Image (cartoon, rainbow, N blue to C red):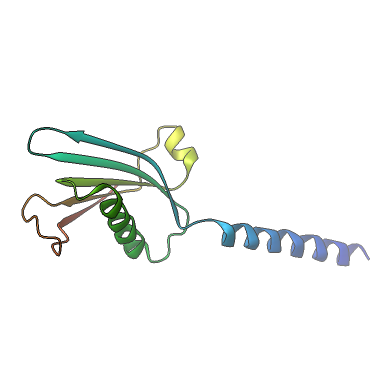
Length: 118
């Protein structure tokens, strides 16, 4: 009887953990700052990534959504964090992605992409 209760308890815990993970969004944009001068506009975004599978497509989706809502800046720096805890406690981002749009203002031009791992 005791063994059945332990198996049932572990099953419930695993099922609730799976449901929690499924309910999480892929990412959450926590903070966005834009710095402007006469000819440039640089934007920095802090993003918490919850689901790491296919992260390249997630980064591209964040970039496209930002540019659709706010317009295309001269450069876009995206700091990716593991969780809000890491962001609150001053841990550096696990990855920084920089899109540089200064070379070509065409709408089809995706910009230069630079990846930095920390």
